[in-house]
Length: 70
Image (cartoon, rainbow, N blue to C red):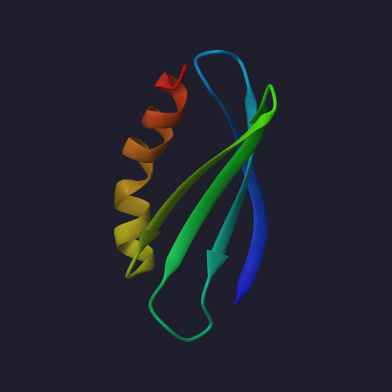
């Protein structure tokens, strides 16, 4: 598994979410996880796909969802 920090994402409320990608060396789960803290709660957003191409294709919707989160 290759784990790398990637571009942080900001919510509509201005919270910065740290993001990591999880790419398999073998296997089928390609993921991006973004997380942060809001008051005393942790926010965790995850997108998972069966291929790198499927993850890349879905990334605009994932990023838009986070940008719209309040």
